[in-house]
Amino acid sequence: MVHFAAFPAVMALVAGHTLAAPLGDWYQAADSSVAAMFHKRYTPSPSDANFTSNYPTGWTTPTSDTLPKAWTDKLASIQMPNVSVATQNNGYPTYPNGESGADSTICSFTYECTTSDDLLNPPDGVLALTFDDGPTDYSEELYAFLSQNNASGKATHFMIGGNILGSPTVMQDALKAGGHIAVHTWSHPYMTTLTNEQVLGELGWTMQIISDLSGGRVPKFWRPPYGDVDNRVRAIAKGVFGLETVPWNQDSADWAIGTDAQYTNASVEASINQWLSGSKTPGLCMLEHELNANTVGVFENVYPNMVSNGWNVKTVADAWSLDWYQNAADDTATVTSMAIAGDAVAQSSTASSSSAVSSTSASSKTTSTAASVSASSTSAVTSTTASSAQSSANASSAAAVTSKTGAAGRVQVGAGWAVVLFGAVVGVLSI
Ligand SMILES: [Zn+2]
Image (cartoon, rainbow, N blue to C red; front, side, top):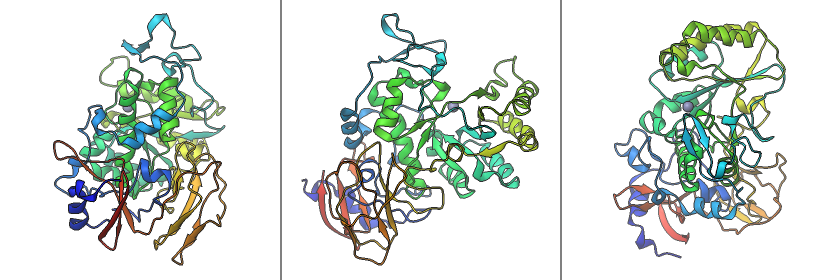
């Protein structure tokens, strides 16, 4: 328990800002795990002059002092495989003691090892449409093309946190158009070369900024830059954050146009067209980018062939019949409270929000009404029964806000959270 006076920044934020999210209502039950992992805080607005000060520096691996305790606590609680941090050798991760990345214990995708959890082979006839590295200066052109072809809602955008930080409204444009937003790390590093805590920062902060700008939607999918992932990184992504790892089963090599003479727009389009007119077993999950005029142009030229060849073009989530986000079925569905990576939703809670609230377990699609949940509003409240109950707390507020003032004045997510009622601070429940 920490006296509230220790957090003057929270007082200032509560007094000075409304808590409305830019896109839809933001509600996470304060007693759900997500409230600690990715909770409602002062939601930064892209139009605020200090917008970027709410996040770590873009395009740099977030440092350990930016990591909320909830993330590091969760990391300490999960079972980690015996896989060392790798070093990079011409794009190939190398491991100590002569261990091979192809070994099933390590299972590096660079060495073409995949796990049964990896999402790379969609069902027959399905094309999981993906664009990496946005938002960029070329994203709006892509979004306009997708919109003209009624395909905005068929694309998954694996976005870089550092790019979102620089172009937050472009990410929101993808979302408003109906696109599916997913994680492509904060600074696009070789993830297997990072320490566990650095992996936390790369994934967690990208999830946080997407959540902040999307009305609280917590991403459910991530793609490792360069396809550089092993079982250690997979364990953190899934175990701490509940993220599904999405490699690919065909690399368009669109990213190499202009840097490797072997690849031209024509050659890349030719290989894509070959796949499009080829076998539909399994489906296609192709590596493509919203990186520059070449990559966007290639897609615009081949998209008609995706349609004419009879592919069922879908987002990654729809390709595997999964929800788009961990706490929402898609961009417009109600944001629900939920549990990340096996954490249980508390069995007893009180909600007095005007929002409709429902809880679902990340590992189960079943939802049932829990008698132990009471609502003091007319809203429907449902909750998934989970295998083990966690600590519970009353949520008699419209929002929960967490803040910590860093040495440089940066507002950071901390481990504690405060409850705000009708604009008045009524207490700090935990830290
Ligand atoms: Zn990338």
